[in-house]
Length: 232
Image (cartoon, rainbow, N blue to C red; front, side, top):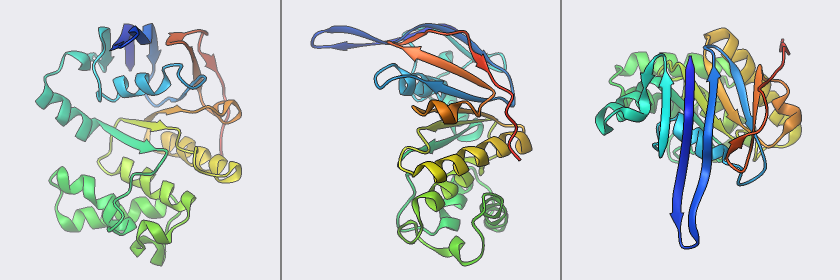
């Protein structure tokens, strides 16, 4: 369970203090596929960064399974990010001189997994997201956008995180490929009992999630909208 209690994040600018996230309280149960939606500048990415322990709130608490991650020291935060969270980015963020397989193996190397186990799990994950055969040995430049995002999803799953955070994961993809990626994420959340939180501007795609949180000017402006879509 992820629980935010009165979380705010403000920044000092030349024109004054800006509240990017303003007194947000919400709950995300385990194994939920959730979306955060809102206009550009509404605070979506700031909130995602707080959930991923990439930033600390100005006030409030962020509890994951009862632990306030906002209060962890820097060493504990690094360990938490490495073991408990997988990240998926709009721009894929793959290492260009590594193959798809090597990109997926990389987080496991940092976690101390031996090479043969890294390779086997990376092959299995890439097959799970639909990237098989010779494509696993290709570098990102020789893969389509959709294929690169599949590699990024496999990489996010590498260390078996409890939480995956995705920031506009379909933003660089055409609509058909974007829907396929969202369906893939939905299936993976069910198969692996993983909580997935996605920032998106696409309300139609957000409707595929279990719950949707809408932000406006840093505030939660709706009661979470629950949906019960199943993806085969």
